[in-house]
Image (cartoon, rainbow, N blue to C red):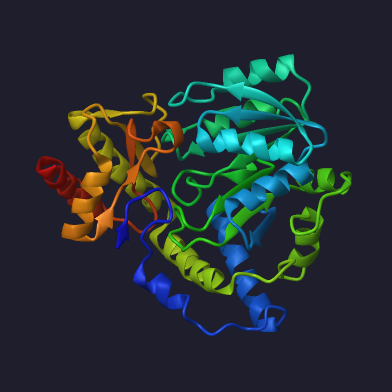
Length: 354
């Protein structure tokens, strides 16, 4: 089945083939060479010379790492959808105080809102979801970072789960202290692997914090990273896949990759506006997935049954409180414009038959 949901997404056959390789000893020189090669490529893709790590977990695991290692006492959590709301819960569950900056779902977190919240509240970290998967909103990360950087003792931690490798990202130039993502979104790899960065500022903060835990202790990632290793057993099949994916990304070139994602998004948004409406506020629409307001009350479950039967593919219903009121189409990873063009035609056929 070809998945056009916002993760996991369709995986290129070359990537699947790479995952079938025999494992190597994860403390061997062979693994260290593989690890070092991938980290070098990721640094080029993410625009950073600082730490890049691989975690055997989903992005949610790095949410917890960020809460335990980057927050001393209190964090400003920017909440604009289901996943940013969940991140606030994760910060609280790890014993840290949360200041909520909330906007209506579909609206963005603006730098002005962040600036106002920071002026009114004493916090030592800011958490922001750059690309909110539940609403299809892309928050203006570069501009938010400019606001946070005016406060030297405040770390900026970014969930870029459905943005990394599909949206513009310059970790060092923008001054981002931690950026995390999962393998099953724009990287186009099956779930089970997280990629995240950590600035030296984040590392120095972690050194001062007690009770960082075991599995998500940033200092263990630093220690093992110096040896081109991971703290615990790595997800080797996904890492073999990442080796192939990073080669594919660099061969395409990030400018061309970003332009392809934008064209697929524009195609999807044009289709949505002609038939329904785009849920995200204008100017803040994501280039990796589109959340569409279901103005015609179409039964998405029935549409998916027809898509499965006729074309072996599916799209996604709305998430959380938006289920039924919206539906979502992913356009990221190794998807091509022809894939999206065909899908939109198939959806038209399925809706006409419902």
